Image (tube, rainbow, N blue to C red; front, side, top):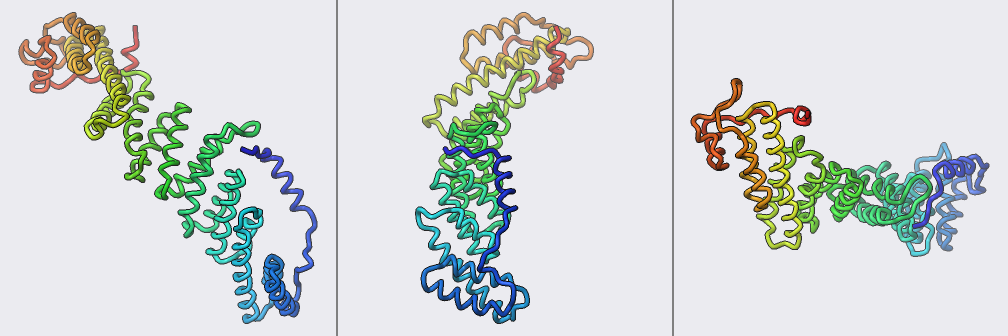
Length: 389
């Protein structure tokens, strides 16, 4: 990847260039000069000097006071010569900046878009993906929802992924950061365009590398919403619960996310049994279940510490039910041992009580049935209170 000079240097160079005096000998000042310029432009065009012909009629168009007929003829010639010039500059080896300049000639939208797309493709072919992106962004600003969005999307996918996978850069920025910028522009501007799923997947991968799990999940979800037939769908469906688990810093704080991840993993396993990713997803499933157990055990220990036996038994029994699903014998023994350590008497004043001693059986299934039928679970404690010694 070729490095780009710092932005400040570019601005300085542009400012110095704009300050230089410039006067083309082809410029006109009077309406009576225009017919001669038109005749000369036609001769240049027939001789293959398309750029000179275009410059002549372009300057003729800037003259004030032209008759309507003359102005119409000039406009038609500008379009004709610009169309030919675009075709010439599309050839391999052409300078993309010459094509990019045509965008600023106030051409019909179709010609400007054609010039911009061709220039962007040439920039990409010359290993200048960021330049291609800047040009396409300008094109979108000038012509929102233009007819070349499909091709623009293709170029942006290639430019963004090329930058994202590059280890190049200059001083305070990297090509990778530029890649994120390009792909973000793509997914926000053309989310449904073909191959935009590649951009969503690449962004999710980079955000996961940066440990920005929320954004990574969001990009996977947008891929699933915008590209239901994408080849990335199954992987994104598996990756979302994995990222939820990665984002959970403490089971006591994020039980809802754990339960959501469990639901997503179970749905994935039902639908995609036998898939190549199944073994990886099952590792996440085991991790998720263990965390749910630890979440309930943490809450149960808090209730025991504050002398709330009903709450302690409720959460310990629920933890045992999930622990048995894991098949982890050590975890099951730990949970059973904790549950046996709790008193079997009724709750203290102020606690919700079960009806009958069966509500506090050591068997998790019996406890769950009794609680579901006769009681409501105690309110979840404040996680900050749980952390108090």
